[in-house]
Image (tube, rainbow, N blue to C red; front, side):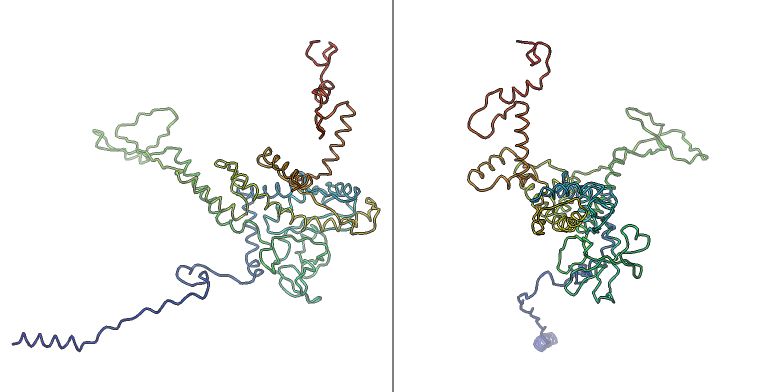
Length: 510
């Protein structure tokens, strides 16, 4: 009876008991925002800084420049990058000027000598441009002051490089006299065009002269300043070092390499420990007055007998590991991508490079360096030339028949070029393009940094020299074949030593 009552009560309780509530998941709504802007635990360490480019640069530029300069002193890949910048942008012969007036070409070349080009008289124009563009890469910007009327130069014009650290980054205010805004030492008008630059004064004044000293700073008009830097965002006032994207990884890799080298040196030493086992020696009793551990030095090729009870336990760390080379290459590829250069060029590694990949890499590198050459011409050479030509004429060392300035400024700059990976194949391709009127001699030679007019002048000089010595070129462009001894034989006869037998060929035969 009681069992039946219990079953009835349990059945009633199951009916009257509240049922658990089922929670339905909300329907997934389509995303209306960028996924990169989503906030989650995975992006909690993604720290966002100021929004304006100048505010970001102002908070970081000093430390970025100091770290970049340290890498350029001590990091092999940073030093290599600076060398690539100077070699590929300026080159061993510099960037030459070609104008319609030979007087301009001659005077510009003469001004590029050490005693005329810089105020300190210690750099040629090529050396000055090399250092200037390397400075722009390392510091993020290069600042040059032009000195019109400089008496130390024959042409009354000279240039001087100013350390970017002297441009006062902490000066952010309004000029009370002009009402212009000063941003990180650069005074700008309402359109954002620089009108003056404010530098630290004091002991550094003697480095670049004084224009106006105010509040411990000196103000130099923008007409005398060339300020070149890479603009990555609109309204950017100062430049950022090229090494900024990779400097943390480069510093970490330096530490890794140092630790790995130390570990490899330790592994090469083949160290070990001496262990004394008492049970192996009968009647052994330690000396209570000598607690120093036993030490042993091994010599190459020597076999040493150990004392009774001593056992050698080797310690053999394996460094470097087999994955070390590939790990280093991966990091250097990151450096190359951040610096916009190819890995084989930056790492000096052409171990696994074939002709096709090398040609592809060379084309991309040369396009990049060609753009850098254009920047150098636009930012440095053009304003320097426009300021130089007036002072050169006023000095009396440059005379021009025309008085139209448009003819003076109609100049062409010839930067360095590059030889192709396979000159034979490229020469055949160029020959086909010439036959099909798809290119010109001038365009082909400009790719190598050669002016076609220079080639014609040299060929004309060669003909005169051949006529002087009675030699004829083996093939001067016509279909008639030259005689075997027309050029080579006559030239060899002219320079061969005479051994006294009268034939002049030095062989002793008639």
